[in-house]
Length: 73
Image (cartoon, rainbow, N blue to C red; front, top):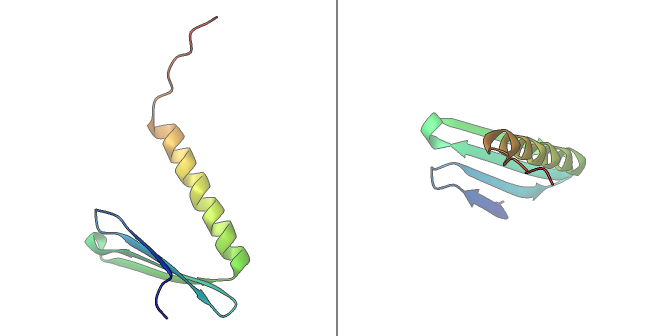
């Protein structure tokens, strides 16, 4: 079955997801690193995985960008 949603970065990585019996299949390809991961998950596992990725991205953003000083009122 073909992926129903594919995201491809300009640097070459790709993430695809598609429905399977009982859950979701994910495939991550990172060609420059010669890396491919394929994971089958239940819907609950996929939701937890998505939440964890979003939390990690938010944490990385907070750590990466400087916080402006707020002047005292």
